Picture 1: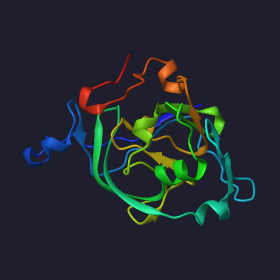
Picture 2: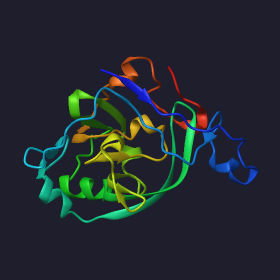
Picture 3: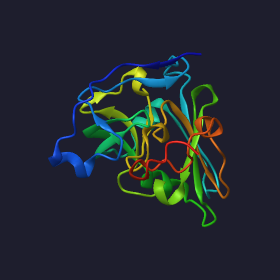
Length: 201
């Protein structure tokens, strides 16, 4: 398993962009690659996506079925716990609320768990997932996601540090109780609010 990061420049924050740049962050025009482990190989014939947990209707899609779901575009900034911020991203994919509607999430739901390739997980509050700027993305800035950035499917949760926007998602599990994810078990803050600099617990 390898932890890999590509460098980025660290300019002073333009005062005009200060209200969009959380404390301790630096702007970058690039999109650094940051992940733990190897990039999974995508096989269209084997790929599937499931929705489980505290729902009335569990869902399952193969690759062709998932691409036929209604798509939406979200314009949002991205903030990484390693201190870079990339502004003005256009993401296209399936909205979180489309998943909520189709699965008929139960009232006791309080958390959402992203379950990814190689067993990686991270969770967020249900109220954070149930926003109009959260989606499951297939493309970024009018181009299909590259494998290193999560192709075929990644979460986009703009209000939290980017490790909560999990790559290579294969399942969403709605839950009444929280479950700490991979990085959270290693000491990362489970709330992950960049404006409060919630980097570590």
